[in-house]
Image (cartoon, rainbow, N blue to C red; front, side):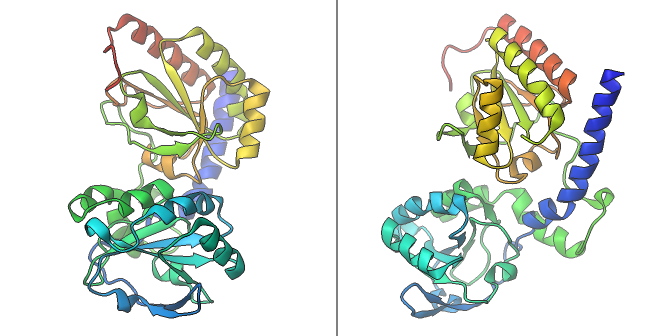
Length: 348
């Protein structure tokens, strides 16, 4: 009966979450299609000079969407100061479209010594023209004024575009970002889950685990690549998820008894909510934060708690585990296998 009640709560929560993100997750993916003409606009920069996108024609640019009230954008600001603003080494010229309080934006630009062009949105919703309602995001626009990359979402993805050469940009533009513009135009409005093209039932064994890099509660960035050479339990959680709270103390106890497998938790919501949870359950494994559902989307399931085992080669090793007992069983089984296997002496 306890298992039935638990699974029932998970199914009800999953249904509610699916309804909640049916617009959010798919629309945030949409972006403009590769090769589509970049919409022109004209805005003032922080010094008051007017600039139109068409003035940059003939040069490759990285158009970055920024908001002074976005914590992730503020954290990105020092890196923006280090981006080559003149297109050196054939890299795109960064152009920032910033929303928020103009005074705060000017102070941030001065404090961080950002030298690239920073344009202020003044009622012209450029973000809507470019089919993104999130920050930080960005596109590469080619010298002919066409979209040359998928929509980069998050600071890491934007910086990857900033540092990429033209020959590498096709690799940076993921298939999801490149294809969703067509999908979105074909299915405008509220779309039923049955018509969604997003993977929602998890990744299958044998599939390479999608890489990501997220900031942890300890201030350190962690990427999936850093776990190559070890077996990993990747858990998706939420501080407002009751089954996640039920899982937490048992997960921590089992983690301490099973050194053969590492644990990494990807959580949602703000740092403070997650710090309270870490302190409450005395987690000894790292917790990193996704902004919305961007990493959940890569792993094909919008639910918590769920977990994957990822083997030493970075490949999904078993079906996704959904719920408290399946996750604990997955951890126990994966740890047992890891202890029996002979692993490389060093991380590749």
